Length: 209
Length: 385
Image (cartoon, rainbow over all chains, first blue to last red; front, side, top):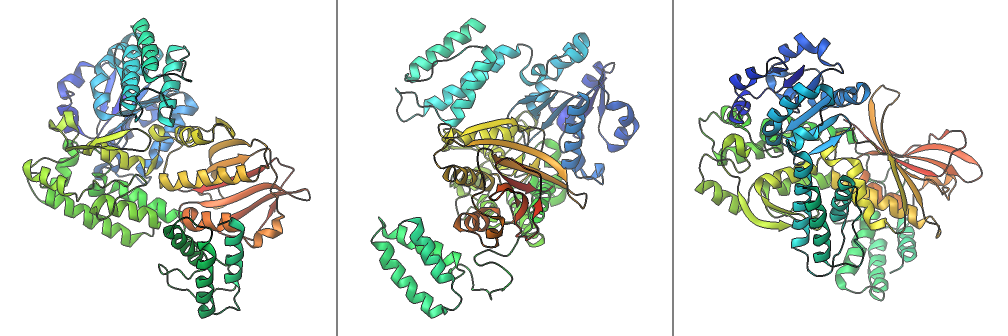
């Protein structure tokens, strides 16, 4: 079972997840909006065969007040996920980038709801073998991930003072590392021009399409 | 001007037998001395200010009576738990939260309800943010730099963060946009509220990234206060290490991404960079091997501590533990300018004469805990939730 813990019903509805759509997945998805609903399922929820989708500020809502702070509860959830290898997806309106580590993902709220249907459909087939990239990047996740990386690299190169000579900086370095990791290919980055870097990336991107 | 000369002047001024008026005369002489070495008048004034601040005669700070039990130059201890509580409450208060999150339909409804209005009103929202922040500042002590940053972000009277960002919750441009777009908040959850955020001329950051609208600004500000998986110590260290990549060998294998806490991330970066520089300076030409670690531990009161360790493995602490009754300029500077109120500071080291153990550098303690033989010098930065 997948537990969707989100106190914000209005936001859910506006992002395309009203009551009817949630009901379409009732065989695999249990929406939870209040602390009372959590109390009913908390003993069975944290199990390796389940998945928890959790709005980070759930316990900041005055109707869901808990003796622990929301940040302590989140830390507990992270620890549970790491210890028992339970898949947990965190989402929030304060998260600006997509992040996947071990069995955990951390996503902007709009990305989460945009890709939720793909994720649920895949879960029906794959169960716990589901790839968290699916909820972070959608169905064609490898292509989407590379496209996002390419866009970030292009944006960083766009405003360079010297457009000809490629100068690596810390942000670019991390993005290029990530690009090479995903594609398992090595980029030549020493003594090259921006154009040659773009050429290499485009070539790899086209091969991966 | 060489560091040794500054140290000499500081030592001279530290002498309690010299009166304040004699110290003023010394400052005049110091200025002449510095002038022959410095490039610009601005630099001279800056250096004098540093010296004045170190001996407690800065114009910015009133002279405090000397406490004979305290070492000279060290500030009054500020508890980092207070900073943690301040930041936690900042992130929980409904109005202040709206400065760190994109506003969705539920948060918008809650803001309107609190303000007793049916439709969003920016002026009322802005005023509620300011009032909530003043109330929070009065409730908890927090570090000066952090207050300055948030003041700048909310009131806009001074640019905020090391990036000197002028855009704030009080910017004229923002107020004009809100007047032209009544009932719309400047940082909406776009797909939920179905309108665009306030766009402005791109703010170029030093790392090459840029901020082009109010949603991005709010989320950038959030990253300045939070360590979490999308802004983890591991990812931050990779960025901070970039400038040292040729001169230091880093081991990041023990830095997990699963520990989250609130802090002043820019101050933490400054502490980190200064500590790495101290390691380089003490390494006598040998490439430092530095292992980083982040872990939680319980202290003797059962309280959770978050410990970020910077472990210079191929080194020895080049002083005896007894010499720590008095700190040099590196330690006093880092305590006064970065650490105090941000985190506690522990030294675990291989001291000379085969003495091994740990001691709290801040808050300053005389309690040395001996240990088995250990390797190198480890600085533990200790944070709280």
